[in-house]
Length: 449
Ligand code: MLT
Ligand code: ZN
Image (cartoon, rainbow, N blue to C red; front, side):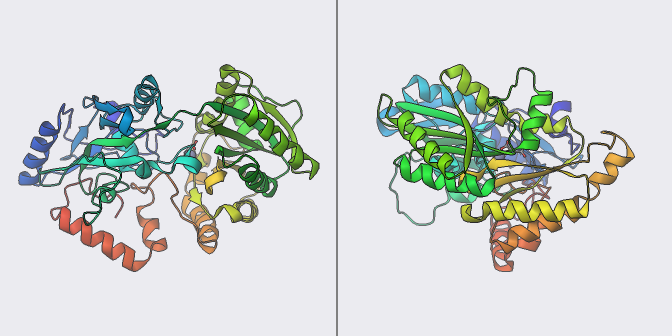
């Protein structure tokens, strides 16, 4: 049971009575029906890569239901641009299956080699391509869900148009297993881009980055797929801790953007457009330098820099994370204000800002001061200031009309914080839905609401 009881960050350690590995929807339904009868709590779990404790069980009577054996691709229909998969499929395997059929499944995130689609959908994961393709929920045509009483809701539609009343599937995405267990999904596929350009760009500051985004969208016929902002601190951490990582640029800069354009045409047109965009941004002083990926390996190396930040930050001791979003137009103001306020509260604090700036989602993470020991009471004292920094950062987010959870979900970590930032009416509606679907409160108790 051991690997299932702790979360990836080592932040939570729970307990449970047993772990079940059902192999079919019928088996999930049977387990849930037995638990519903007996009033036994169930905690669903996928790849256990979540960052908010949503998949950790905290009750010694709980059943942990891990979906990893439900890992079949049930069907793929390239002409309908759809694939039907079971909840335990690893995200990278779905990407591969789509690729084998000459299609694209665009959901992409750092943990794609081990996260499962059921968890991605339950938490409505975001990732690196939201700018173009939307969040996980936007990629779903139909769902199969085991309800808290053991009934199976078969809504595995592969239709793009179906206006027959309430849209039930969206209830279960973002519910993090509190309303039922997603057992399968029909997902949207897309055409594979025929050309792809990736650049690692040094920008003057976040304001310059956001201007570059607008310039790139307008100047490239809306082909920007990814636009990731990386501060100097997270890049330094990756260069320090990740074997083989190296800075693609010669000089030292304070801010970077990893940007990717994907287009429908073949040939060099996209590179030309990207070069033009960067040249005009450089003339205005927004861009200081840039490196282009000239091979698949170079592209992978650039993405590795970005995707290793979480791991690298772990090696720097305690970190207080904020997964927040604001309108794209105020991303730079948010970063400036939150940085000033946090550093004023704790001089020496290392602000580690990075993230999906193209969709307004910043990971505004805070690492303990460099001179503190990475383990022991001083680290613990830093981590104990979590709520104080939440108040600072979330206060600024709220003032800008943002969200306290852009893409990681609520789980346990943000459950109480949610009650402070979500409208009372929205919380009442959420509680009404929970009560209606799960009156005995057995589904992932204590999470989300
Ligand atoms: C990422 O985009 O790398 C993760 O969502 C951020 C994190 O681990 O804080
Ligand atoms: Zn992220």
